[in-house]
Image (cartoon, rainbow, N blue to C red):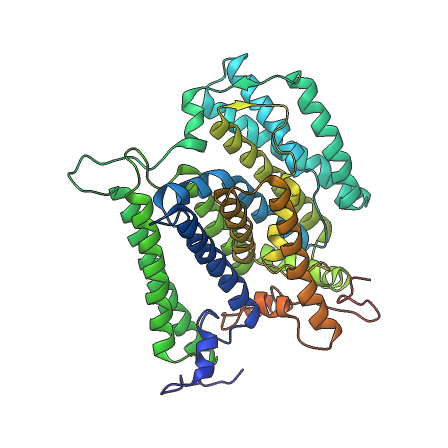
Length: 451
């Protein structure tokens, strides 16, 4: 780092295009690859459904986008917690069972115990916290590997869910269903779109502009390399167009619909957890422990407490996901949560997390989850069965991780490592021991091969 600001380059340089989504610094091929894959998948299914259905494609429609958010928001919420678990070098196989276990307790509390639905939601979050504390205790303070603890949890809480519910379907009241099927309300003005949805989009655009200006100011103050001004302007314009176009689709759907409440919950969680993992001491400790636990411990990081909190946080998010699913389904059933852990784990790895730990981002995991969501959705629109969907999802996961491992074995830089490296961030001198998304290696441990 230099003591004086590095001026932004003037004129057009093709290499500057690679800085488009790097926060003003150097971006990466992996970052473009994941975003590009998502765009290609969406456009591909739009063309295929257009050829199949006639004059209009079925992917980029208001109704379909709303369905994607409603149907996959709970998986994306699980991915937010799962990426933190995987960064720590753990895995959580119990999230589907914990979600189902919480769902049946919440449903029973309202239908049989006459608990008001707001209190039932708090009860569900408390159940998730208790389950997470139980599993976190075994991982952090007893030392049992998280794989074993959560495998036991998957079996135990699945059985407990079926035992409590007696393999029956338990309905939930209308008020509770809002968190799974609700939309932003209408405002009584004679306009052909949902006003709160468009206002939300304008707030998002304002935040994008503010964040880019702030990022450039921080880079200038720190003397970091800055992208040319035209790159920042182009990036903000492109992202703003995407946000406004998506918001317009949500706001102009069939009467009574707008931006879904589950999407609003997901958006809030993404903002909060992105900030926590990227801009707080605790977030840096997660990356530090995941990158090199021994080095983190010697530097004063309370790794057991970090383990405990991350596992508990995962179960709380699983409880929330379970309640959203039950609200959307309007009832809790015996098969809720089946296979959710696999979709969440796949989303995180497709989104750029490293198997060995220490690398991963919330945003990357959300993008990975959207890749899986639009794959599921597009194949369903084309009339493909669950067998084809499952095979293609497996191949996508294998190829995404396989390409990264192959690059490492060939001595090339890790594309996943590039994906999650952040540039141009203002560092707190008191926290410069660890950097988020940096893998700390201590020979002879081979973090590349995971051995």
